[in-house]
Image (cartoon, rainbow, N blue to C red):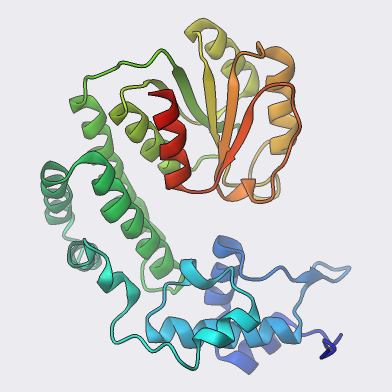
Length: 306
């Protein structure tokens, strides 16, 4: 068996050896978890030779048109199987059913033609049913924007403006859907300090579409307030979107937050957690707790309630 080298490399050396910019490398690491470098006593990242090989392969595949979000989790051997043989004539996003619309929206955003982007999002919302609108257009669009931000081809301001336009359409979709038929009552929020709410808006829209009573609290709800609201609302389920750790802005760990809820809420209330910060999350409770890692899983969860 080939023995892995114990030699370590600084981020500057990785940049020089791979040609990947520091901005892109950090984006791949923080947003997509492509790397998990060790740290020196002073906090500096220490990369391995495998990290360098992976960075090179990711760069090669991205150049060929692969989406970083689809390949960042793969190992070096898995990436090597793709790199030499799987040429793509067009980027994978072009094969998506709504790819031309996604490209058009991106072009409009790059030109700061926000009203036209808004009109196109509204038109597609009217043309499509809610689920394909979200799964085939909105989610790939958000992924594409995230990738472009990571590559430095899209500013954070542009991302925020486009996210606001997307949220407007999802909120309108909820308002227009009046049906409620389930006995379940879901509260949706994120832990205190977690300000990312796109996943919550999407989840709330899907729940509403399925005819389930949903109370959307928005992001960053203090745990005591969430408990009081759950009791007053008669909640049957709490959905938590956790996208950041304590180091990234959360007021406390997800484990601590959920343990507080568990101690102060009736066992009849089930918990569901999702988001980037729930990777490898596991907690044994005397109530039902489900970790969801994809929209498909969430839709199955909703279908079981409807």
